Image (cartoon, rainbow, N blue to C red; front, side, top):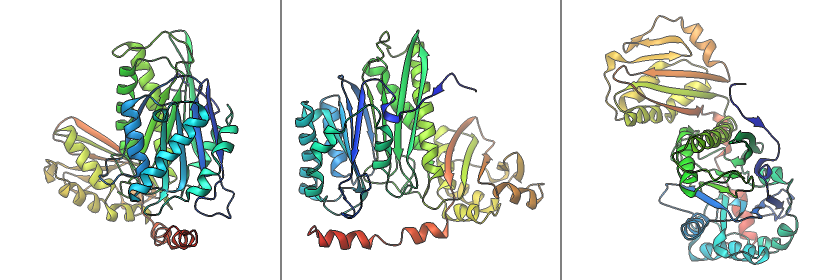
Length: 417
C-alpha cells in the first residue's frame, strides 16, 4: 500500500453523524421502483463548499444551491435523478426552491441550509406531484447505513453506483472522508454532467476546507473527459461537520495539507470511476503532456488530444494512430515546435522529433488493445505538464445517445409538455 489510508465502507455515511435516505418517485418512469430521490443530512452544523458547472446555461438547482452556499453553510443535500430541471424557467426555480424548503421544514433547519441537485433529461419540468409526495418518507428513512442507496439514487446512464470512503490518523485523531458520484456522459474538464457529494467529520477552518476542495477538484474532476461536453447541472459539494472532534485544522498548516491530500485521493478515485464507467466506453486512457513551455500550454494540448473524436475513435479501434494525436497537438493553440514532439505509448516510442518512431506498430497495437493504457506527449520546450484521464468513443455511444424520445412521451402523458 502506497498511502496511509484505510478504505472503509459507508460512502457518504462513512463520516460520523451523517444520515442518508433514498426513495423511488418514478421521476422518469412512474412504473419503475428505481431509487431516484435522495437526501444527505448532518446532525451537526457544517462547513461546506460547492463547485458547479461553468456552462453559462445553468440548471435551476445549480442556481438555488449556489445562492444558498453564498449565504450559509449547508447541512443537507436533496437530489434527484431522471430529470435535470434545466431550461425550465421560473417554474423550475420554484420547484428547486420547493425541494429545499419542504426538506428544511421537515428537518427543522433553515431553507438556505439545504442544497438541491438534479440530473437527467434537460428541458422538461419535474413531475413535482410525484416528488412532493415522497418528502416525508425520505425524511423518515434517514439512517447511518444508507450511503449506498444515495449512490444508487443519483445515477442516470451509469451502469453502477460509485462510492469511496477512507479513514486516516491526523494529529492523533481518526478522520473519515466518504463520497459518492455519478456521471457517464457529458463529461469534460471544467466539470462535467456529474454530481459528487463528499462528507467528512474533520474539524476544519473554512479557509482550509475551501482551498482543499478547490485544489482537489482542479486535480481530479477537472481532469476527466469522456465526450467533451460540459453539462448544465455539474455539482461537487463537500460538507465537514467536525464530529471527529480533532483539534481544529487551519489553512497553511501541515495538518491542512495532509487533509487536502486525503480529500484529493477520494475525489481521484471517484473521478476515475466516472471515466471507467463512461457511456459505452472500452478504454481508460491516462494522457500525460510534459515538456510544455507553460502549464496552460500543457493543459491546452492535453484537452485537445483527449477530446478529439478522431483520436478517441482510433483508441476504440485499437489503432495506435499517433498521426491523429500530433494533428490535435498542432491545433491546440499552444506553443509547439513540430520537430521536437515525441509521443510514447506506455514507454514505447511512436513518434520522435515529429516523425515516425522506431517501435514496431504491432507492439504499439498490443498496447492500445488493452483496456487501460498511458500515452505521453513530450513537447520538449519546458518543464510544465498536465494529465487528463480520458476514454475512447464507440459506435455504441452514438447509438445510446441518439434519442431521449421515450421520456418526452412520458412527460406528455404526465401533462408536463
